[in-house]
Length: 443
Ligand code: 5AD
Ligand code: SF4
Picture: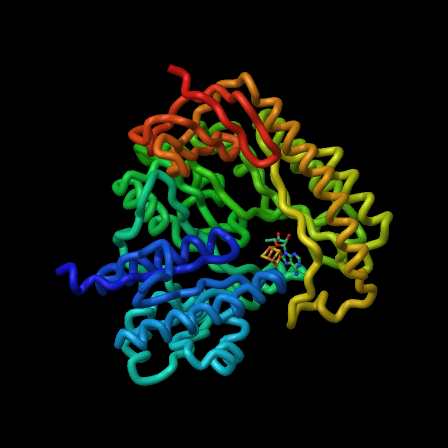
């Protein structure tokens, strides 16, 4: 490949880690066509906006960004250069027609199950505007390139499961990502080995319902993790996002038995009220969740726990909300995410009675975050003085700044030689905030 044949590819990613994985794979697919990923849209030959539809705010951001992409395309056009603009991901899946209508400068719109067809779509886009929102029954994974040409750094995401059959009443995922699909174990193990060969030491297994994974040849997610742990060179394994209903004994035991499985669990509960959990169609109660956590803690006493919460779901009274706060007090989370309920078109909850006024949602989200932030801060502060193994997974702003992750998934900033990038080193924690810690490498 000559330098002049190289084209600049800018991918902007919103939303979950599955989108990050998809964006990385798009870069891998486009690598043989001469595209090289760049960090800013400046002078990019192709721009892909990989979008998220989970809440209204996320969707709005796409349309405001699209305006900037039109300007970008016009500036390049004035210089006689062509620019391909693509919208990918869940907004593309759900609102592809609207995007093409509202944004005539968009060349391609494709959903999360169609991006493996990017090379064909690029050819088609020379003569027409392309829309591909096929949810497909064939797996895109079979068509993705074996090579992770665009992989960079010691950590990688690996999608093992996609889609969802749980149909929580608030969630668009079953409609944008389609039915539940588990990749075969062999494919996953091969991909893990190829990532290892590229220098990856930490793999995060991804799925909308990752612990519902039921591919062949292994005993659920716990069995799969055991097989990945057998791959030489993979020092750390994580997984997300899980559903309480799928926390089986093998997976819980894996937290006790598998050294490489990091002591961190993101297990969204959404609400602490049985009545709200029922109307959300979560298929479990608050006590069921408490029981799972007790069993996980028995297996791995130091496990760090994380969750997602939705406040202001239709019908949520002050009593229901107080039950959520109580569950948080009972369990204690080291990190978590809380969202105001956002009605999503086409979901059952969008037609429910008992909408909660915005003012009440604002007040509740503030209260829940106050409680959660206090817990996050307390956990991080309690780590001061401890020595934790840190994987140096990124570069900080300064010349001698690295970013890393502790086993508990805490973000950490360290002043050290950049040559330490990619290493796992013992670090003594010296300071903490609600969202990160800092420390010094122990000589
Ligand atoms: N409104 C608010 N939050 C939502 N989430 C999913 N759908 C909605 C919605 N309609 C949150 C859930 C989920 C996380 C990824 O996003 O908490 O776990
Ligand atoms: Fe959405 Fe519920 Fe499926 Fe999670 S489990 S992806 S919240 S439908």
